[in-house]
Amino acid sequence: YRQPEIFAGELWPQAFLAPKYQNSSLTPSASRSLLERVVEYVEQEKPYLDNELRLSGLAEQLDISIHHLSQVVNEQLGKSFSDFINEYRVEEAKRLLSNPRLKDRYVIAIA
Image (tube, rainbow, N blue to C red):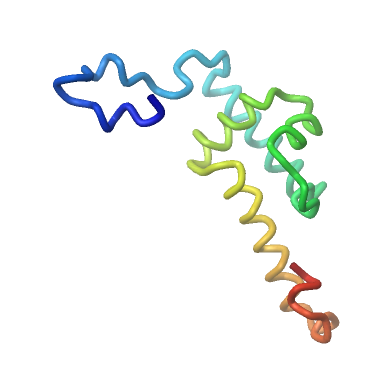
């Protein structure tokens, strides 16, 4: 079940409600290290500027597994991959919109 907590209680003992990444080979230390690498790459290379960026694309750029990238973003940041990337996109849009040299641009052109 996708949401076993709905059936929790007498029908589903807590033993059946395993954490999502319980069987992952990624250690907490490796997860933190990987997060640093991901954030550094995203901030320096700005892959979020590509409207077509997907989890698989960023994982390929970083040469890491899709599962580990997803796990790191979910567990370490407490958000989805889409939310993670969109936060960078929003900050970039705010930066561009506050630039006086770009005041004549349409908002849609910046987005």
